[in-house]
Image (cartoon, rainbow, N blue to C red; front, side, top):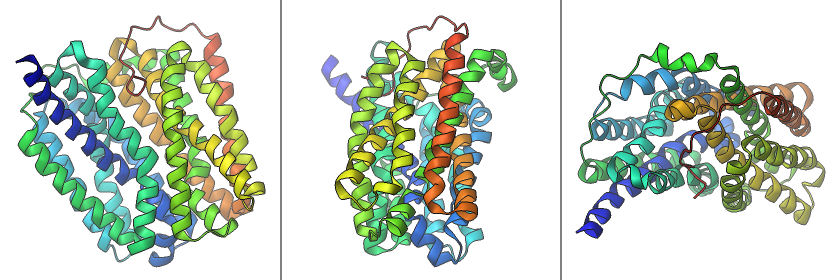
Length: 399
């Protein structure tokens, strides 16, 4: 009987993980499609990069308050509605005739992404019970991690073979399929009643250590996405690779990222800030070296492997690090990390575009490494600060 119940509880969690893959791929897929989309919409790559900024800033601003507000809603209805909204927005992106319509199509899913991300793990725990919380969160987070690692290269390959509009249309179909699966197989779970107000929950930011950890996530992601937003453009324009080759390169980048996810999940429990520094230093070096070695296939592979491992690790490290710093309210800590990370993504895309317009594409890596350097300095400052004693919290990706 117990195994039968376990089997019934695993399927909804697997579906939440699969839905998370679609939700997060919708955010990140645009990175690999940026050059072709810019050409088709008649804008520069740096201006097209503002679509990354729009999405990220929207997530950053609306994340914590909307998550707190929607936490009261019945989960099944909330998640199915979110997937239907993502399907609609991806259809609109697929048929967008100009930059303005595309911007609106990117704004719609950004509103609901942080709500799904923050509440999916909590829902998984409600399905399995607290005694299996770690496994449930790990399963849901796998879909999210897979999206950050494989969503971009898969979208790039689809876009190169059939056009970038087909990539968005494919995401719309996936969202519809997963909405239907959640409708039929996700049990009804009531939301939280009598939760504290948004203002009172956000009071944890008065703790300078917690605020510092959120700022650190902002700097880490700003540094990563100053260069990563334009990685496909660097490979095409400076490396001379065609779209299909870029897609396969990004697939390899994602593949080694699985190693980074594994390493980050283990090192972050030993020293969250130490792990942040340990992965930030090599990624900064890789960003600087990328352009000089872009025509050497072996050296390019080594540099991108280092970058891919460190970047995936920093996704995991940042998420767990902020949750541990806000151990009294780990769920809100996760939401604050989402906001800080996405604010960094948006600022990084802006900074990278500004560097491209003002100094040229080859200088993006130097700017990105400079921001990563600031994140290392911030981590060292936090190390010297008195941190709260962390309460044991499940590691989303580090099982």
